[in-house]
Image (tube, rainbow, N blue to C red):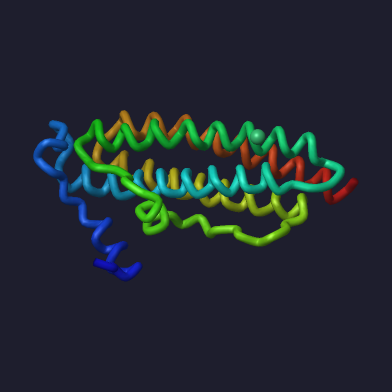
Length: 181
Ligand SMILES: [Fe+2]
C-alpha cells in the first residue's frame, strides 16, 4: 500500500512500543515518550547532516580543497558516531528509535542540499548553520531530559553539545578566513 508522506509521518510518530522492546525504566511513560521523541529527532538530524557533510566532502572544489575535504570528513565521522549513542540511549530508557531512510526524512529538520554545485564558502556557511540548529535542538532535548530527571541522556547530550559547538567554532573561523583571504 502506498502511504502519503503525511500519513507516513503520522505513522512513524506513533510511540507504540512492542512489549518485547519495552526496556524497564523508572522514568515515567510520559517522560520516556517525550525524551524519545526529542532524541529521535536528533538521530534523524544527525543522519541528514552526516550525509550533507559527506556530500560536501565529495563535491568540493577550489583552493581550499585539501583543508576542507579533511575537515568535512572529520566532522562527518563525529556526527556519524553520535547516531548510535543517541539511538541506543532511546532504547535503554524503553523507547524505540529509527528504522529507515523514510523515518529519517519524516523526523529530520535538516534541509536536503541537492544542488549540482555549491561554492566552498557557501558549503562552510550552510554546515555552520545546520550545526548551530543542532546545538539548539540538543539544548531543547536536554531541557526535556531535565524535566524527566533523565541524567543519562542529559549527560550524553552535554558531550554532544560541546562537540557540535566545536564544529560550529571551526566552521565559523574557516568561513571568516575565506571572507578575508
Ligand atoms: Fe573520503
